[in-house]
Length: 202
Image (cartoon, rainbow, N blue to C red; front, top):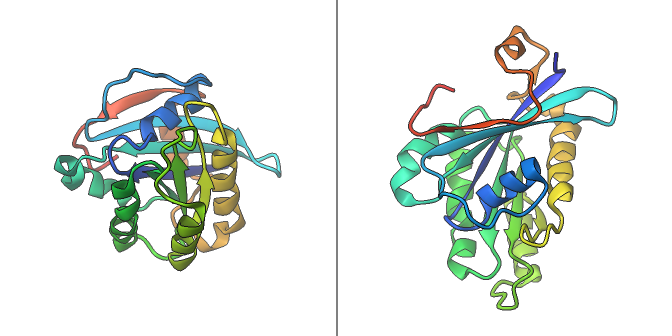
């Protein structure tokens, strides 16, 4: 049985690398071709914490397209933390960060951490400077990390940063499931995923 369950909402604009990141965590490689997320997709990973406790990290991959926002907004509720993606080569995805943060925090307290993830640093046509991102992250109390899913840069470091952030603030986070009977409802597998198009009760 798990000691903890962390529910992670993965969100941000369309085509910023959310699904590619989660696929990499499962397959340990970059998958070039995949179907766009419709509504919300679910995946999970088992991790061992620094004090030898086990945590089941569940990821809710929310579609970035506006037509799915009425569905994905439901998955901002009662989460342990958020992973907010943007594309460092796409200025619009950067400008939309504040809107995403506001939507997320409308359903969560300030004690629920958000890790901001700048993806596609392998590309040459970068549009957003690190300096600007760090200022924005500081203003909105976000942790920030840059990655390239395509090149496999900082993938595991992103997950470690997220888990460390949650665990260091676990006493302030009301949405961590701690060794309760609810854990028996979850399948005891390291990796699996399924699609969830319009459910709001999972």
